[in-house]
Amino acid sequence: MVSLHSYLILSAILFSIGTIGVLTRRNAIVIFMCIEMMLNAVNLTFIALSKYLGNLDGQIFVFFVMTVAAAEAAVGLALMIAFFKNRESIDVEDLNLMKW
Amino acid sequence: METLFFSIVAAIAILMSILVIRCKNPINSALSLIMTFFCLATLYVMLEAPFMAAIQVIVYAGAIMVLIVFVIMLLNIRTESGRRTQHALFLGAATGLFLLFQTWYFLSRSSLTGAKGAIDSAAIAKVGHTELIGQSLFTEFLLPFEITSILLLAAIVGAVVLAKKKV
Amino acid sequence: MLGAYLPIIVLLVVAACFGLGSVVVSSLVGQKKLSPVKLQPYECGCEPVGSAQERFSIKFYLIAMLFILFDIECVFLYPWAVLFKRLGVFGLIEMGVFVVILFVGYIYVWKKGALEWE
Image (cartoon, rainbow over all chains, first blue to last red; front, side):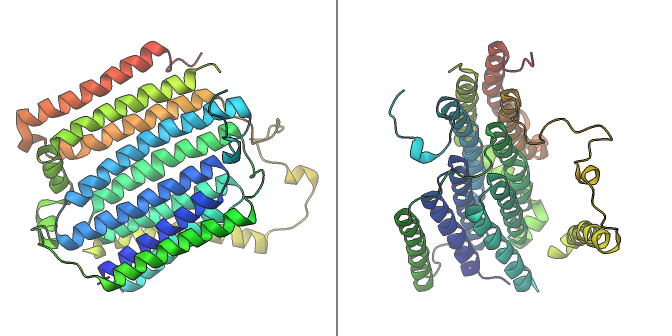
């Protein structure tokens, strides 16, 4: 029987790795993937706690998190394509203009 | 046996997520991330949430990652133009490690309290996981479910407008 | 409980072993006389034309994006389909509202011409 703490620690590790990725990478797509990883780490917490509390509400939340992630992927990547058309780069250091 | 299996899956998940942030080529990062998602789906199965595991594979590994890989190939970015400065690297890593330490500290000091619900392994085995999820989703969470469709509608309109716009 | 998933693990292990095995065996057993022709990417016997990593058209992206959003709709349909009989007319109405709102998006996409391949 795997304890709840193992799952929570694993989720914390994945979340921290995602944070480090967001803060240290420059490629906007890699940053985006790290955000997806952080969302997944939180999903793991939800499902682990949902099992140990004997309550399915956490899993319904995971459902909605996945929906938001899909909507975010569609719009976020469209934004990246629009940005790339303008600047020929998706380096976040180039994202420094309020308008062009 | 179960602990051993958990350790293997967790180790693969952590290794692959480190590869996501270490690989130079975004395609390699994306493939490592798909592997991480599969490991998480395995953990969902171990947590008696097979329906969640299925939609993890369908939505994350199947749809979102396909879109990300498409965009990487569409923009055709092979490698990163340049690294962040040493300063930013150090601060980023320090923040991440601090976050991890903080979580670990609070987890090691606290214990789980509160009332337990009625849904245990026996109930899931008797009624079925998908049925239980649906029961909850279509009665208790009816309004969030309907609002989700508006979110998806906004995402459809937004993405079409952004992608079709001639810049 | 988890024993029911044993066949899947066996399948994964066999698939991984087959993939690894064929690479390892062919590198151990096969001949290693490399020539420029042999090192070319194999394209059904045709001469390779250009690089394999060409830029995709944005049309693929639009289709993939619409696929994701309607894929989410399908994911919501699964638990509804399982519970269809028990939810009855009420379930039909609530799913009807959901689908109609998304159908508005579909009509928008259609009228906007995002489904045209040109």
